[in-house]
Length: 478
Image 1 (tube, rainbow, N blue to C red):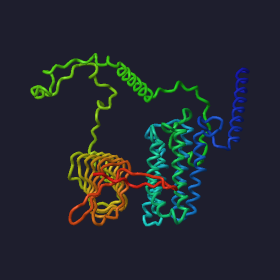
Image 2 (cartoon, one colour; image 1 turned 180 degrees about the vertical axis):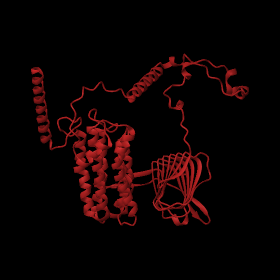
Image 3 (cartoon, rainbow, N blue to C red; image 1 turned 90 degrees about the vertical axis):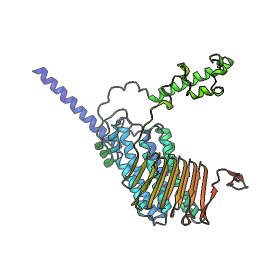
Image 4 (cartoon, one colour; image 1 turned 180 degrees about the horizontal axis):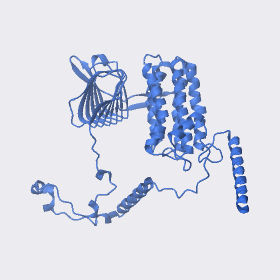
């Protein structure tokens, strides 16, 4: 009995001491807890680095936006809120282990809602005097989705930055010589994405880094971070040391690629000996000298090692067959994977709707009515006929595209495209054509009941005039 009493006393003392230690550490914390592994009350280095970005380039952008006031100021406050939501997500990732993919989507919802809010504000204020400012922000703010991109989130941010540049160039064109406040605003905004790319390169080169310890992230823990802005619940006792790091598929692929290249160079370094394994073909076996052999079909390959298909060869990987799509999803018309369809039509369009055309081949689409914007992405031998577009028509990563404008369109953008013919109407002759990294572009202008073709320059010459670089199109030699 005495032994039991003594044991109880020792347990009570131990509990009292643990409670005292926890109380002291909790009080001294007043700071944000659970750093990268919930240890020592420190903030993860990549969260600290993100804070520096918030206090630097984002704060500077807010300052210049407040100077311009109006819609730009309101929009900038939304951008600040979106970055704060991302900061909360990064803090959560530094404290918790990565959850299942469907849980990640739930955790990303606060950020996606902020992005949607920013884009909706632009749509509601199309009559704003600073619409180009709003468009620059709206088109590039999806860059905050880098946290869901792997393995190269940095280039994704750059693509969004390029989308902003299209509109910031318009801002510079309008205000460069009249109001330098807008020039400073453009520089501060583009600087955000440049610094974000540098931040990703340093801390998340191949994707977001989650904690290796701590609880698995959940919507409940996310709400805790959003409401407190700092701590989760007190960390559990330290877990046992983690096992060896996992072996990623990228390393295996890299080793296989290195081995393949080494084998290739070994073959090439044989010099004249490389032809020893070749079999001599007599004249009676050559198909170009014997029509009868050609009629028999292609020769059967001998089962030699050189003809064995490589399991890693992309040419031998099974092709995925996607079902064709033509549907309205929210405000977006999706036209995808259409093959040899020349009777595609979209009716009953609305001003707020957009059309996204993806991987369509040897097909033609007609869009009737007025629509916000149209994007043609990764299409080949595709024809588009539309009535009116109030925003922009974009052609990206495509080949052999023909576009006919029946009504009006303010801007057509062509990027990374080979072969693009644009037929303008009388109403759309004031359309701006913006092109980059593209070739074989032709604009057809209506004249005397017919069309006259004008090529878009592909080459440019640049010279220094003593104070600046002067670039002009090179003469096209036909």
